[in-house]
Amino acid sequence: MKKSKQKLFVFISIIFLLLLSACSQNTQDATSGKGKSSGSSSNGGKAIYIGMTTPPSQLNPINAKELNTQILSSILFESLFELDNSMEFLPKLGESMETEDNQNFVIKLNPKVKWTDGEPFTTEDIAFTLQTMANPKVVSVGLQSLSIIEGLSDNGTLPDGETEITGIEIIDPHTFNVHTKVPVDINFLKEKLGVDIRFLPKHVLKDVDPENLHQDPFMRNPNVTNGAFKLVKIANDQYVEFAANNDYYRGKPKLDKLFFKVLPSTNLVAQLQTGEIQMNSPSIGPIATDDLERVKNMSNVTLTTGESLFAQQLFVNLETITDKRVRQAIVQAIDRKVIVENVQHGMGEVTDGPYPPAHPYFNKDKEVYAYNPEKAKELLKAAGWDFNKTIDFAVPTGNKAREQAATIIAENLKEIGMKVEINKYDLPTALQKGAKHEFDLLFIGIPFTLDPDRSIYYQTGGPYNFSGYSNPQVDKLINEGRMEVNPEKRHVIYEQMVDILHDELPNITLYSLNSPGAVSNKVKVGEPKDYGMYYNIHEWDIEN
Image (cartoon, rainbow, N blue to C red; front, side):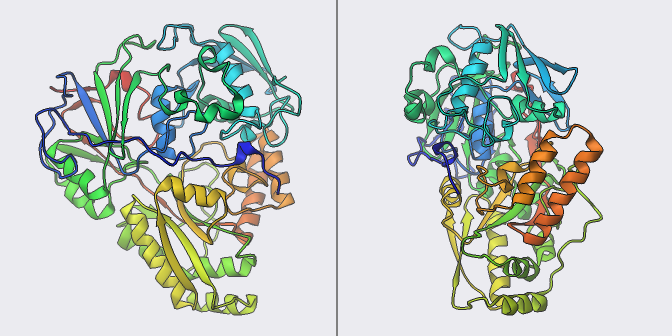
């Protein structure tokens, strides 16, 4: 399978992080759970501290692969729209997207938006960013999901010799058109272009060599941004500090500072209780299920429970586990109900397939693989499995419940005669292992997306296709689904895709999780959410 440089996962190996005390009068270890924050930063202004369990590898907005990097970079670099918990698209940099034929889309920008150096944000920045991401020499997440746009190849790159995307037409500084190869659902474009892409300042980066853009100092320390907060400091494995952008186009933030503290799950809960952090970010700072009752009983915080949106999956390396019967054996060997009940304390649901229960394309009538270790043994025997082979089971650190679940999975597989070795890595390294196919099983979470397109995971050459899966029929269905406007017909197409994936199991969905959140009662505006949490971040406020 050919791969462009654009699809290679390049991770910065040195992460710039140092220890932060929760406030100036607190000289104790910030991760000890001792000391209290009153919603003030060290300079006396208002601040909110948010707990997360894994540090970002970098804040490059066009190469944000991990969810924590996506979230933190989006505070600096905003998207055109934002998806909220009610699955509505809210305006941000973009004021509107309209179409009369589902093939030609008119997008209007908010004319008030400025970069933090005072330069206006315009359609030139839009075109520059998209052309940069479509350049196969640039290290980025790429535009494969937007290959439907005229002028892009099937893998989302510009053809040789081309420098402009013909399907992106600038009308004026605040209006541009997008032309697609065939009609598409407007919500597809709102999510894939409007929500998933964050934009670069052309006037700052236009002269940088595209091949070296990912190594430019700007990408390590972005100092010209357009969000409600500006970057102050990334401190080694401990925190990221932001300061208010007083010229923010939606209004001056009420907070002076915003901190994301990197904490083990246990310390995250302890610091919620002491007041050293005021909330968690559910998707990147999960509360360990063992601690839910403790948090529920805290008098100073309010506990919220999210929907079942985030799937936990085993990616299977199809170069080393080639027979689908072995993959079917693996899923039937794992007692997923025990994991959900005992490790997740019921905060989840056993599911199969690419869509979680809260997704509109989830089929509740689809039969789920049952726990059946005897059947699993029969399948291994029929497949001629080599019982001397040791399974390299890659597991990211930072999520206590996932690590506990990995231990149960390994024991389940050993019970059917498989040899398993758990190898733990930090999240960026685990994803790098995935990109290089240096694993047999890889245990990671999959973020929720509203549109049913799953090309990044299952299409040949997809940027997150860690399994190395390639099925021409699935590729065809993905392309048909992406191009279909009629919702009922799209359902039929993607249901066919789900049927194939359910049989072949390139990825094994284990369960979908609820994401509990907790927020200090001192916070007047701002709360943990699965989606739309940071939409009104300029309005967040806290008692002094």
